[in-house]
Length: 345
Image (tube, rainbow, N blue to C red; front, side):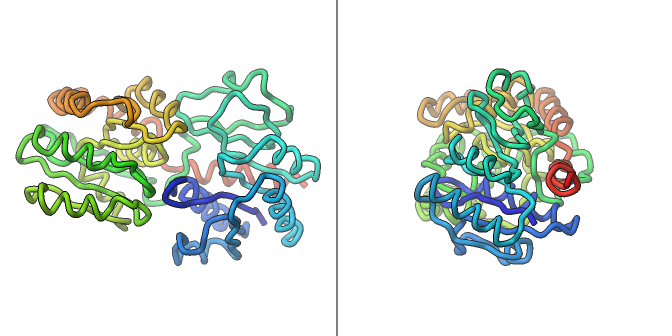
């Protein structure tokens, strides 16, 4: 048994829950049952109740109360370990688990904090173990670093090569499943009139985005029959494969784009996306334009024009992205959890 502690809502976003459910599915395929603690049941899917044998709606109050509840669930199920995917997890929270001999994996984007976990996963494509030197507390910690550990749905494995393009015809704009902070309308209003008139734009948004109604109204008035809004679409892979360029936030969706060879123009909408966005840019799989609150529409237009008129650059970005993410990260992480938390006993 493995206990997952994460959360999801329009403000936090849904990337944490998405990667936890992917990892849980990989574990259940290896006959390891999983329990979910955190998200409200109204954000869970029918499939979640199949993957997790039990779910606990646990609103965050404070670290002390939360870790006590997680420990209670661990004891109740005699769980072998915990997966922590929540930015509110403190050092004291982790040390409590360690003092109680509870093994745990922690998703950790920061490299300037003390480490108590048995397993640290950071899928930033440019991160290295040297980034954590000086902050180790648990000398037995094992690092799972880089994009090869990114957690993608099964449909993103075994993909065929992307067909080369000669002209940008389809643009994908997506800023995750939560609150887009107004970034979608910002991009639409900048690109619709500046892009080639034959270009089609697909907007992919989550049910939890409070701006969906505003986006819908804007498309009706200004979309010129060139814009489609897809809310929680089931055919996500198909949308990625049919797109030529994406304008995207710096979160977990970047791994899906990279895996499908979709070039990215990244605009971050949260501070925890910044380092990852810079990493994709430095490796050549994306162009990081900047943080949403810092960029102008003209900067977006200029970046889009430069990329869309440079087919060779598009092809290079596509190849680099596919080389960095192969879609099998969930099985790598699941196998490591099984080895460290279950078979080591």
